[in-house]
Length: 362
Image (cartoon, rainbow, N blue to C red):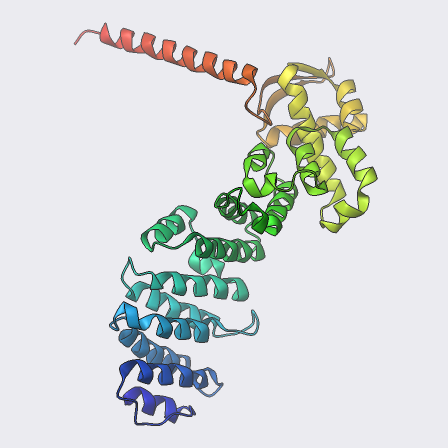
């Protein structure tokens, strides 16, 4: 009765006398709550009324409250643009309902999905600060089926990408693609395409071989986008330049920067060269990476800053001395052998340390 009166006083078209059935009554109240977003209603009144509704929603048995929660979240996550001045009010109310529900309640999935949607629309992703491990834990606790989990991951990715948080968006996309199998990989075609483009465009992503193992990415084998990814995984600058000359329109359709692509390929090419060479002459770098002689030193400095290569320059001898380099791919017999030797050496050194410690006087 009090809620209906409060709504009616603020312009809602609702009868003061409610239905005897609490579910029907709450549905009427929620539908009438649209009037609260009018210009003449104070934010404090909006929050007070909606918090009263929340206090009722959380005590309704879960098997009866799903439709109510759906209506509630639809009302609060629906905005027209990022400039909606009450977006933070909406987010706070959704968060209140989320925290009011039992930790294991599947209804939390509905509320969190609405929060992600609102965060993407209103540039409020920092309000959520989504953590992938936490989201995965929630999905498990709520016993969310795979298709619904995929929908949430996709919404999270889009919200993070919109907020220019590319590194977090990329991790979410990898998690999303990892949920597909060979049987349904074709359904993730667009997602796989986005993931490849994002990896190539990210100036801090240099290792991409793990993408080739994802089922949706494997489904793209034979297509230009997969060929382009393969070049960034294991190809060299000349391979990329040849691909670009034959598929210029395709690369441009991906909204990728040709200059940025070539720069990344120069770094990747040097990484490949460093796997088999401990010293590389400036002249070789000029030729292989197509860099003017006066820009070689600046390139090496930037290369070292990526931390993919540890090296120093010998300007007098005009060469680069490489101490270590990150391998672009892993899985060859030689790489496994090197790993085995490194682990064996570490184990022997640890045994020597333990033996020395045992000989110390008590």
